[in-house]
Image 1 (cartoon, rainbow, N blue to C red):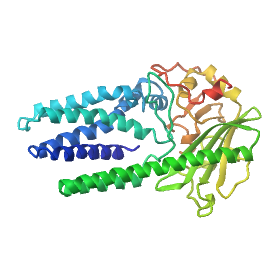
Image 2: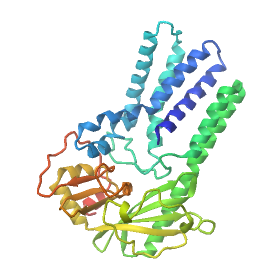
Image 3: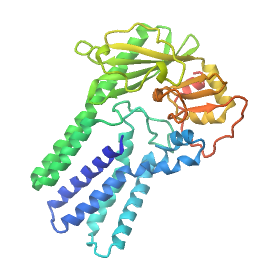
Image 4: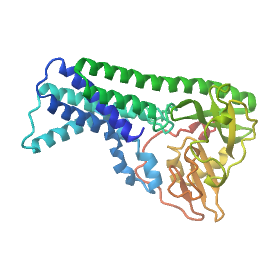
Length: 381
């Protein structure tokens, strides 16, 4: 999710503890709010400190996708990050000569919020198509929630309203406002999660009917903000020894809102905006499914690129929807169709590498052990 949502959730969590503590004591409420708000907000964005590690692996495009949402986005790292945040808060208060003393109980609550923050961060990041691997080192697989867009205004509205009211109302009503805000936020996530699960089941059945010879490997779903009815879809699979990735727009309620009436895809598809050579999807559109374009290639060619270029092998530890193309000068562009549509020039596009012809690049260093999302394709299973 976006940093603002993470911060807002941290503030709401901190305020919830403040209101719970207000039942027992009111002394030091101002200092307590400053401490708990600060610790909780920082802890909820702290996992993104891994941006400082992207330079560990070159080139930058590769380092970013391998190290962002990396080790700091794991549950096992949450207590360590929480301890660091609390230590920074303690040091800050020590350096402030006029800082009010903080009780041992408040430090305990601060530590609890500091540990909870990274866990909430990982959970939220796991709700979109980018994914996380929260169970490392026990399981290095990516987990993709395919539930929320990276910015969901309904979630921001529910959390923001709850926080505002909680700071303006008396304790009893403030606690009620926080409870309603939490329930509304949960309802937003649950609505999109249910829509995602139903869409995945329906789309798999629909694709099987339209392409009976295809073996579907994955259905990548991205919802539209504020709209659980319209979804961007990528079907990933193999058909007659050919790998395919087909992009479409899906409507969960075609009678009320046909797929053709859904907004344009969130990213430019096909045409001059694509950084890969795409084809038509080759399947008939339906009221609930509007096809856009697709990529086709052979799995054998992808395996060859992986075997010949260690940088491609490293990149494929991130890529969920592989795509590649050979440019006019012989350069091979390899990337992830999830992040296509940023313009003709593939340089700098998230999760994209360019391999110059007749040039053996040095193998990247400090490559994490994330499991390849498309191991089912790379192993030929």
